[in-house]
Length: 342
Image (cartoon, rainbow, N blue to C red; front, side, top):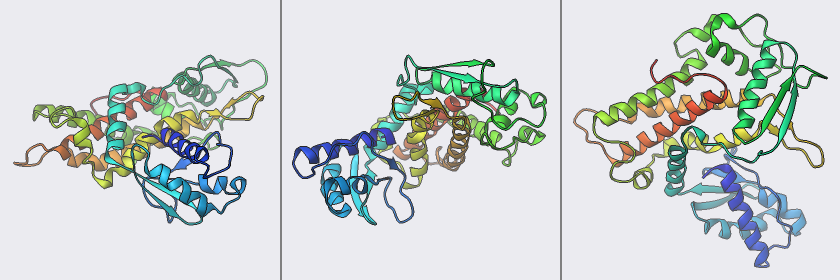
């Protein structure tokens, strides 16, 4: 279950509480769902009770108590706990992890893509500068993955002007050059150095591409051993055994569609929404975080010694394949190749 889907679950709980007469409020248009902060528990948390307390004329803790019973009965939610002044902390059950990974594997590189921007055209006016051109191209790819289109030109007032590259990045090659320009926040001056070419842990681009290549390698090795994420028992049963320490990886997979959606700046109507130049850098940092937790998972995917493939191995293999799918899809949206071998 992604944060977007969980947000809909929270709003459904609010609607049911209103219909039952336990709350007298207008159902909000959105509910913020995010990983819990300090003092929080579970997989995700929401401040919806604090948001509704004043219009409901009730203390936040009372609103949270009302919503807890409806959320606890929702599909995919294993438990709900209230912390602090009224934060609702949600713990997802194993089937939610299974559904998420199955969805990533089924949708492949198009996971996170949708048509929410279908028919929308965004105009970008950029200077004749290499970084501006690359950032605009990445934004166009991300918006295109959501059904929209970006019109890039050099005419008229400039609307996108990231800090320019200090020198020509072409000697780095197309992939390293794009990473060097896209990974930093748009207001930070990029480093155009040979560090982007070294194949070692200190190079973020190498870590992302290496993690992707390793997921492909363990899939090949698992096939040689005669098992895969779709072997018996089925993926749903196997993924229910996902280890608690894999939560960070699952959370990053679930959050990927939201990262793509941040390319468009939501503004109140009737103002036309705009594009956020920081979206490509957020995507690059998200892929790096995903790569780092994936590399922690990979050593436990394959059986060791005389060990036979188990449901846990199948679950970890499914997670590894899902992570590799998102890494490849994200790199593609940045215009960077994701080789199967490094």
